[in-house]
Image (cartoon, rainbow, N blue to C red; front, side, top):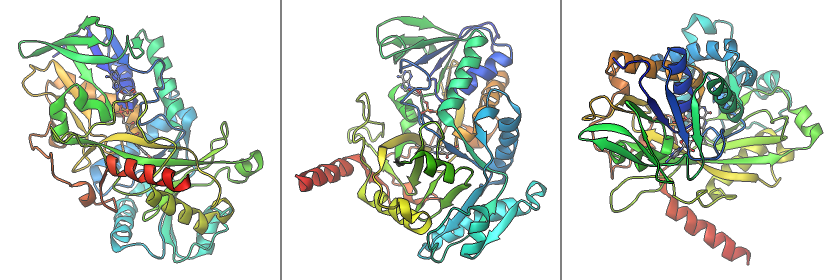
Length: 436
Ligand SMILES: Cc1cc2nc3c(=O)[nH]c(=O)nc-3n(C[C@H](O)[C@H](O)[C@H](O)COP(=O)(O)OP(=O)(O)OC[C@H]3O[C@@H](n4cnc5c(N)ncnc54)[C@H](O)[C@@H]3O)c2cc1C
């Protein structure tokens, strides 16, 4: 077991890194340093640098349903996080033209909740437009063929504000932060024999540690290439509509609405009046042909920005026509691709890197559903360090090499085909030329 006063380095100040720093400190670890490449936290490179993320307990796997129920209690009761949790409820639906995979996923989501006592009286089936309007009266669109349900015990959290709050709490507990493209960006892990003994920053400084924890989300394979054998950097689109003050007031309190074959949206953010939408699909990867590993593009901000794929835009405009037609032709602003770390079975990886004598830990494979776990995620890393091994098979390091296998479209809860980022760049350039 690691001595609690030994130096621990955490690389990455995103959702998993900050939660880990906080919980290690709460467990008595006293010498913790977090390295973050952005100048400030919340970092614009974090997948959680966003105005909202869904917090819900629908999972096909009971194990995650229970964890999500536990974390919802933490969202409500932990003062570091509770100002940012909004239990607006959650509508899950399919449109009239949804493929059977989307309808099946919805049924699986629903049945993951209906047998649980916590959800007795909290779930309502929705079959008609009037049913939907009971929970989101602001919807004026036709909702053609929509079917679904409303779940009261769910909502969203303001993710960038949650990161900031966790960062402040960590700093107040004496955790050190080293940030910035030169001072905070880690370019190399240092080894003595098999043991990882610390890190090197972009400005060439060396920091030593007994344990190094890599929490880089989509960027994990940049420091530990073998993570790229089983965890793929993948991105999904995000777009926003800029609302007026009156429009923001109108939509205040709407539940999160997730239409499994189109996409999802949230109540507008009161501070920025942005209404966020995300299309649902298999997303894009950025595979390096020479080693088969997908990583986000290395530039300061990944291209293309202020653009989302035409197919995703079509889905979102249809979603708006069905729900808020008055918004359907408004320009999309702050369009972006958001990168996360994806695994074939949507399981996280919270484990020691094999062959490093328990000196190196990797936290990866959030698979697009990790943010909600932020209030409790770090507890699982404390367990790992105290037990000296990952007891849960599902969160162990994967030996299987998945490079070159396109499993993205076979994930149960996703619809569509995975595409390569370079195809999107070609698409974007084509659109720019067509406009000239
Ligand atoms: C479009 C989209 C929608 C999502 N929606 C949801 C949702 O509704 N609900 C949900 O629960 N989850 C959602 N997620 C997933 C969620 O955002 C992630 O699970 C979560 O952010 C993962 O945390 P992380 O710490 O692993 O990675 P991140 O939060 O991405 O953090 C990684 C950190 O590493 C830093 N970094 C990178 N390289 C270096 C380096 N060399 N040196 C130092 N620092 C470095 C980055 O700046 C960043 O701060 C969504 C993700 C996307 C992309």
